[in-house]
Length: 113
Image 1 (spheres, rainbow, N blue to C red):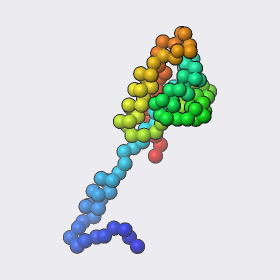
Image 2 (cartoon, rainbow, N blue to C red; image 1 turned 180 degrees about the horizontal axis):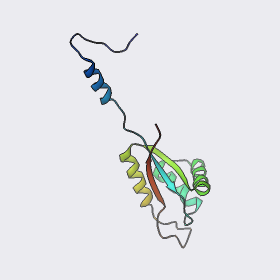
Image 3 (cartoon, rainbow, N blue to C red; image 1 turned 30 degrees about the horizontal axis):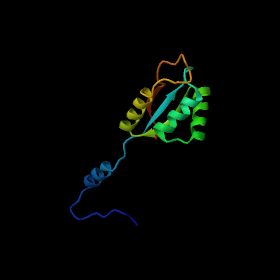
Image 4 (spheres, rainbow, N blue to C red; image 1 turned 120 degrees about the vertical axis):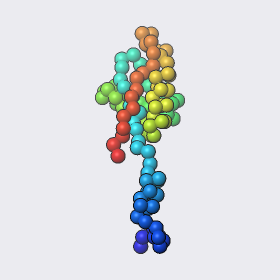
């Protein structure tokens, strides 16, 4: 049984327009990039503060960025992904590493659908 009702005089075009209105925005990944100037503690704390990730997940992500060079930390709409990337860039230096001069780097990329 179909969940759409076709009324006399309605066209296929109206149905297509309704379907287009309900399309979701494409998702984007926020990707944290590795460097040698931030400690695991910093990464875990930042992920907890900015994304609400528990320490265990933060550690897993810190390990992945350390070993793989990058890790997806969040997937969301483009606007929110841009905000979260900017928050990573503004988080500040790691107080545990004296040579650290600034925040970590992050990029956003379209997520596979």
